[in-house]
Length: 228
Image: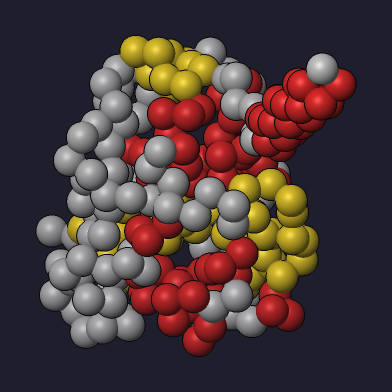
């Protein structure tokens, strides 16, 4: 009788332990509760060689998260898919499914206008071929001419509503991997250009971005233009 009681007690302890472990795992997972109404579909299709709506959204969230002048998001950091998110209610988790490296924290860099232009040149280096280093941008509008020689294709750049100044410095939000020179960007900047490493990855930035507004609209893609 005593033996059966001990066995039952051990079984109960084991069950309680499992419940506690499950609860701890759930508590450790990030809680994303924000949602917005999107006035337009969101897509990553073509991200390796063109501006895409989900790239614009994600780059905006990154810039908003660290209050930067601009943001760069490499094509490799979102998963390309022919499945879009339809207009209507969009949750943070809907976007997170497309994020390739959900744990990569955001970094704030201080870059000169010259470095920013060099980064944009690298972004369009092999256009119209797909490029994992093709940059989605926020706070930036630029035009490039693919008929020109490589590294001389960017013909105009604006930060906000002002022309880019080569000698001026700007704050730029990127992911940690890009800040550390992934995809060849080590040729343009170094760790010395890093001003802040946050604890905030893209999913958290998107959640905060959604929490700050009720609607979004990415029906117009006008940040990256190809010269006629």
